[in-house]
Length: 222
Image 1 (cartoon, rainbow, N blue to C red):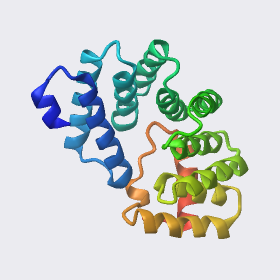
Image 2: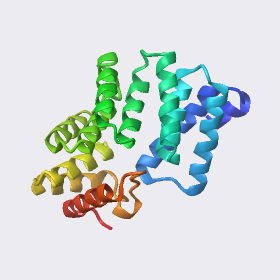
Image 3: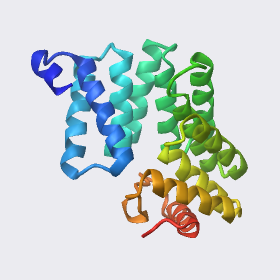
């Protein structure tokens, strides 16, 4: 994608696709400070060049929220993307995640349900299910969160985020056997995951402490 940008510096979607790569990298092993600065640069270029392109705005908004902590700005960009193209399932999916980050789980669930209706055969349907698990976890509905996390793992057995959500929701719900089993699975998928390298965004300190405690009980290393 950098080669595409080199050939056409005004190609907004190449910037957006490059952001996708960094997002997956962040999920797999986190980002360095330099990489986070680069994602911010790419996102702002995607917005500048693709101000009328829902795809570019969606990935830019999500990246700014997830990688750079700009939650309100990211949500606003996703809202603009949804106004431009209300039939783009990925935008509803990414918006659902950002609404979880903003502690708006009910709005997140609405957006994710719409994404699922728009694209029921989506190759990334597991990502919608994972986000749904995160929304129910944020709403303290642990049984629903574990149910959606299990669905996501059935669709994509290598989803580290789904495995982590399953471990967390089971631990908070008191089912420690399932929590430890999910944690073992998570550490097979992503052996580098640690409590110390997990990002909780702007989660309130008491909520962050609750999640960290659940992860410890499930067996995540420090």
